[in-house]
Length: 470
Image 1 (cartoon, one colour):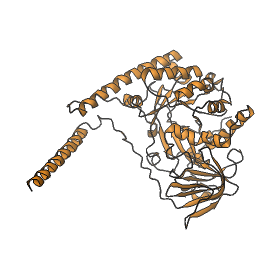
Image 2 (image 1 turned 90 degrees about the vertical axis):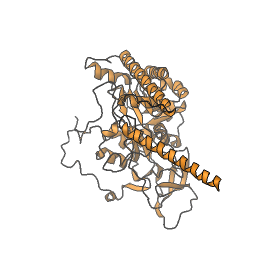
Image 3 (image 1 turned 45 degrees about the horizontal axis):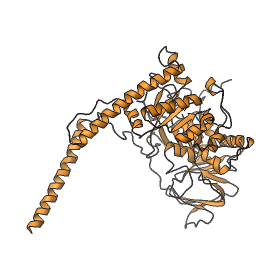
Image 4 (image 1 turned 30 degrees about the vertical axis):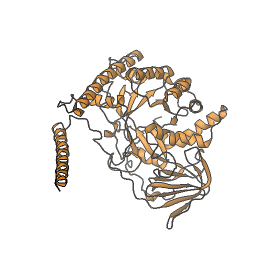
């Protein structure tokens, strides 16, 4: 009996100590509110809907995993893909959609978009793309500029785009944080944020930052100035990250110590140095990509993806060795000097070298024809004697960008357990004549070309003055 009493007292003391520790942490957190970095101060409010069981049957399926299934079925329920194949058993009460003569693919994933923050001919006043006030604006988060009502989201959705990563612009060396969105209609950006998607940081080298700040008579105005500024920025970030690491070590050992003074720019860069954020670098020339690789090794941050990267084919072996991906276009080149060596075979040559390669839109109008971008890249490869199948090419706009964005475990392929982001095309998606006929996001029919009244078109642009460029 005495032993039982002692055990109860011991357990009670343990509970009291735990409660005190939690309370002390809460008090300390309250005392330092705003002074301690928050892991997720702007959380997603997006909830995967409980969608009804739906089956697309008798379609040609490109799974995004490298497989093609003829006369296949995709079964979706409760926001998830349940089964994909030729002998799928359908549950009672499932809604069946005949996909005979149609093609079925994963929803398109766009890894570089400015929808919602960049102007268009119809909404010229919308330009929240660049915070052109400092070469380093790592403190800005592009999600704080995203306008959920931007018509570009709707147009992209009608073209089969189900997930997008929005980036700030390329005027600054460090442009700020990216955000990944589900392409659904919502009132707030939090209602579009892809749950659990990792943040990225946009960086830019070369002509853009040099031109913007050189025109202001300040550094950087040359390419050597760009690298010099980058080194100064990352040196400061490394010192800051070390100070926080030392603070946390002292707190873990029970030492009472005040936290370092927060710096919102360096908060973001410290997370990059700690491996928490992916880096996405706007860079065109092969020599500059190599310089950025050297810079990353000097300060110990990983490069996830080079964007645009028109000369990436010149260093494909280096990119494969360093495990750096590329997000690019199929044909754009030559509209500025650093793009003059862009070639249509860039995508195919990178693919052949084993580089994780994706296509992106960048310009809002390209988000409406990502499947055509893939078709052009595939056709260019075939003309050059490089064998690329549809099973490979579909990955450029589905699985590969999802991998680059850190969401491949949830979307980008048609596999059981993943989000039911699915597109049914009117025909071969690599034909310029094919259109996205039905677009499902998390199993919910978000667009139906045969029944456009399902989700009415935005009337935002009615009465807007459109100034066409001659």
